[in-house]
Length: 267
Ligand code: ACM
Image 1: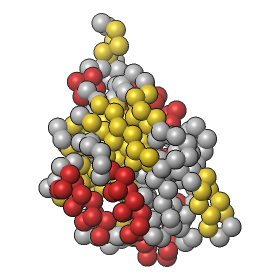
Image 2: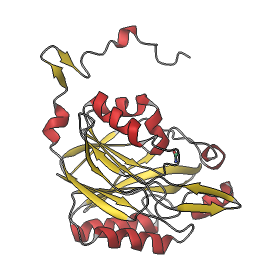
Image 3: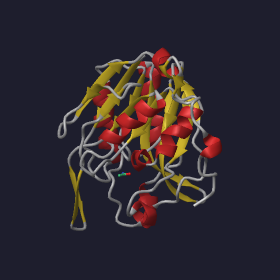
Image 4: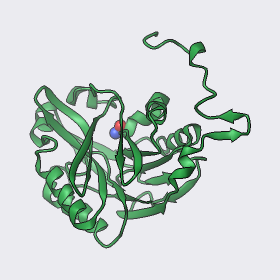
């Protein structure tokens, strides 16, 4: 299976241009599953919840789901990409999975970062895994990386590949944690981050790029630059993500001792 990363530098609020730029980067390449950044079509720094709501789209009815699904149909591939989602009860920081037959699934970010808490509703559905091109794919978004429970939940549900749209701004954090998440769960992880700076209402954010695909031992299979718009592709072997053995006596998931861990719901 070929997994592709699309590392973009979106212009805030210019949906048509941002989507076209991302599709143009993918078009000459071949991948089974592409991962695009968080909020790849809109940019990240919404000034307030009204602006986030104005730029949000219903999923799957909105234009970006439509554009991505059309690309998947023409290019026989799947895409995971981040979007602000307009839902009947508010706006979510979401990622969708589409394929040649159209919409497959949405994930709503569970762990909101910084001012996202003032802009979006926190994800209201548990982590889940879906099948794309024969791979069991679990979606998590950016800051979810800092909570080991995100990747662990997906691994326990059978995920073989973590698709991780991101807008990482804290130096190195995210790239390092995702290598550990892949290692501790024995899965592949594809983080698509953006590059560039975004300045809105006097606040400048600098995105760290270095989108990466890591393997089940935490090994880096592809890592992009810190500052260029580009794509990266790695061939992955899903059988490696199904083998959780560490030694002949140890297994990354079966050796857990949940009976001795903090009970669910405890502080
Ligand atoms: C982040 O969650 N966008 C840092």
